[in-house]
Length: 373
Image 1 (cartoon, rainbow, N blue to C red):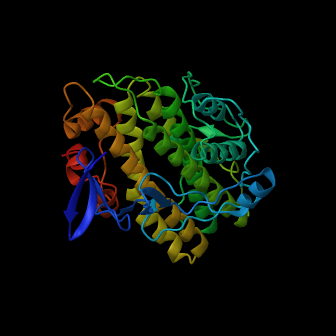
Image 2: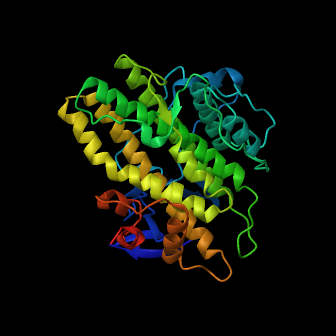
Image 3: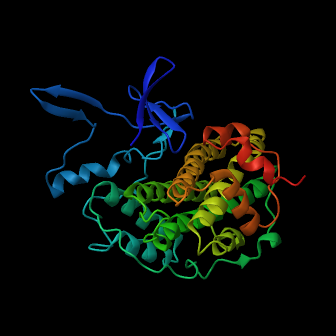
């Protein structure tokens, strides 16, 4: 729910809790995000909504969905003017092709966390996103997630500091960078499912529970991360390599383990600190690939970057939501600083991508006090 206000001569819906707004005529927001809006007309006291959806009436006609674009997202939909790549044929999930019939959302989340194959993890994630959006999964449920997501036994897992990330100056170096990013995306898939399963039945300070929109947002995050992994995996293969050819690390999961008992801590460290750090390193990483005339990789990185801004926005949105629904409400920014100092090792390090962070709604007062003075 929100308030209707005039901003810049346009009628806008404004959320007083999350510092977020969007125009009702085209969905544009002053944050830079884009909200899906639909035309509404009233005829003879009947309300008609043009939602640009296609009604499927039989199993045969559902096959036409195979080559269609994925549905619009709910986390600001996407960055303005961004068009994510369509699913490839081997990724598309047909309606009726399901692996988890009758399972609750949390049961599906745990099964995906227990899947060791990265390819299967991606397929199951994208299928679940479509089924949730289509209303095939209704029950959220409650399940205990595994201590750690499963990984293919062929992966060579090292400590984070033992892996050398390339600088993008040679083919081998570019492959190393893309491989490292693919590893991060696989962990990011699991982190989205883990926050869903781990905190599905959490009771907030005012006695309320998380709304369905929370789960919708993080299912969208999981689907985006699955898309990113596939893009990186295909790019690695086109460069003559493959995911698993180089060592990987589990640094992201180590941060997650620090916050297993705190939803606010998890949102702060994983979905606001680590995700925002991805925004910080993007410009330099992309420029290195651009200098090597690797246009295909630059395009992949650009797609990932635009989606990651919405992920930081989602983390910020739900962090502030949980703070506001405490009793009494918690002052968000000081609480963020407290949690990061308690659960994140070290200080935040510049340079910061101020534009990307600001687009996600993260102003300087959130992160500058966490820099070593």
